[in-house]
Image (cartoon, rainbow, N blue to C red):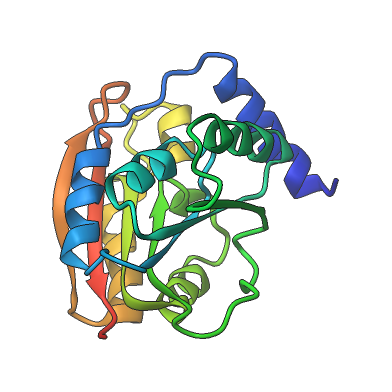
Length: 207
């Protein structure tokens, strides 16, 4: 296990030990998946799928589609695979251990849709990551990201700085990759930090 895997495995173990996870984004993502054409025989990638709870819910709604979860943490991968098996979804949900900051071993436009939730602030080369999402997606991408107006606001905690990115920086990255075709579809308030909002953004890549 390399250093990056060890670090993310430690994070996964902490979260799995009882840290609260917010799933308010799920209905929004389901709606956006429909908008991007998720239907029969669609392929959807979740980059940084963690414990695969989202993928399990998606697979139960979109019963004829195939879902692929990419996760670097061995612990989270193990939990995700057990959850998929528990729900009997082995044929529709595939969990893969993969560093999502590297080029994915799939052809261009292999997936119809790719999703990234809460992971962008931790990605070193954010533009390359979003560009890779665009490369692998024939229909579009969905990105949910914690944002703040000023990352160095004195009222923002150290944790808030570590899990968020500046709103303008996020929008500029999306614009560099997608031009003006991306749009903000939902803004959720983060209960733990008054200054943090969760922006859910969609960008179409064409069919």
